[in-house]
Amino acid sequence: MSSPSKPTSSENIVSQKYDRCMADLVVKAGVGFGVGVVASVILFRRRAWPIALSAGFGGGAAYADCDRSFNPARVPGTRIIPHTPTPAEESK
Image 1 (tube, rainbow, N blue to C red):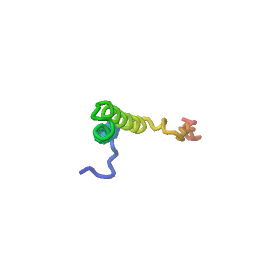
Image 2 (image 1 turned 90 degrees about the horizontal axis):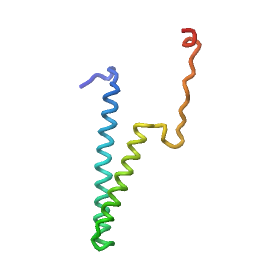
Image 3 (image 1 turned 90 degrees about the vertical axis):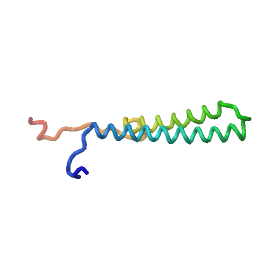
Image 4 (image 1 turned 60 degrees about the horizontal axis):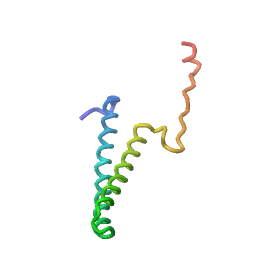
């Protein structure tokens, strides 16, 4: 087990984000697939398009969440404040 004082490498952070995105994709596409099967059987006389459509919606939602995870500037309402150098940094 790693010690809490040891900093996490950027490679591990990216790996954790990627793993979270893949798990989110599997869950959301699976839920969409299940909803599509139920809708296909009950409402649409066993057609295939509701399954593909709802699985695609789930995959698209997972993609959007993953995009926000890797690029937080795309979250609505988020401001990126530019770094202003302190007087000590300017004198270097």
